[in-house]
Image (tube, rainbow, N blue to C red; front, top):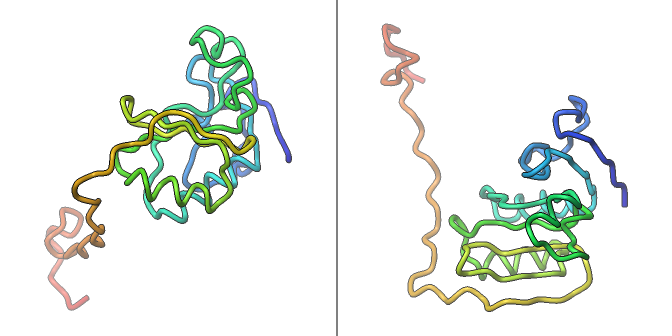
Length: 164
């Protein structure tokens, strides 16, 4: 497992970040801007994003020791190793999210329905918190976006309508 520390997320060299759906700023410590790149954890996070085919809204990822202490975080938090992510459930069915996260190799799960997120990490298998209540109506399947009619778009104003 490769880990690389950056004193600020903006120090990540262009072209070295290999996770297309996440930026260094999203993964960096919210309090200090410091970043610990844990490649194994980020690979699993990218696999989860690919599996679910929808954005993962990151509430918290890496936490520097000073930020973790100031926020009252656990002294052995997996966030300190860049190995944990708190993901908002606003756009996910929590049951489907948990199943997919387990499938791609996350082992630690913390459930926070009152705060609207699930903690996932690559530490030892364990879980805590009360699971999200089952929704009366499951999330509807997402429909693909309709194809824009170019002739009606702002970028095509004044261009003769053609058969596309």
